[in-house]
Length: 165
Image 1 (cartoon, one colour):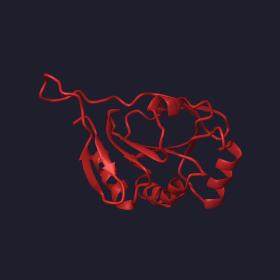
Image 2 (tube, helix red, strand yellow):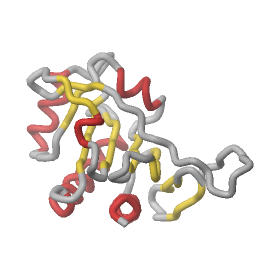
Image 3 (cartoon, rainbow, N blue to C red):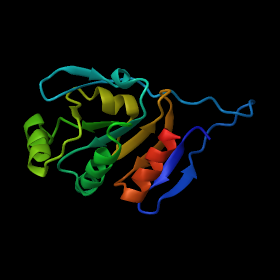
Image 4 (tube, rainbow, N blue to C red):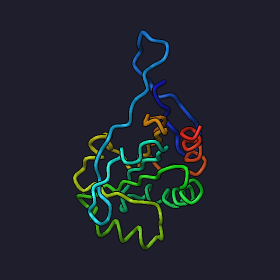
């Protein structure tokens, strides 16, 4: 198994199928780097967080399932923010603007860091087609687990536990 697919709303873990290989242990998948921007327009790369476990979440303020999980992410950030980097990537572009996304974050009182994918580098790099999508990356920079659709508290905690162990 190369990484684990987290199943939202159940906390269940299911292996993501990996191509068969001759070796007994498959090679881990390195998390690809990308560039997104903070609210001030400063470029931030995923590799800037190297050496720390990372929760990487792709979301938009118009996305109902994204909105439903944001409070869960805030609670997790409040609990593990000193141990885990939360990289919340807003899918800025199309019907999502920098202004609408940042207004939503402010109105809701979220304090986790938000990056804006204004040139779609992060979304293209990760092949994100479904929102929300969350990746769990260990401190060595390897993809450990992925969740598609809104994550509940139990499932988010399971993913965090996997990158902290």
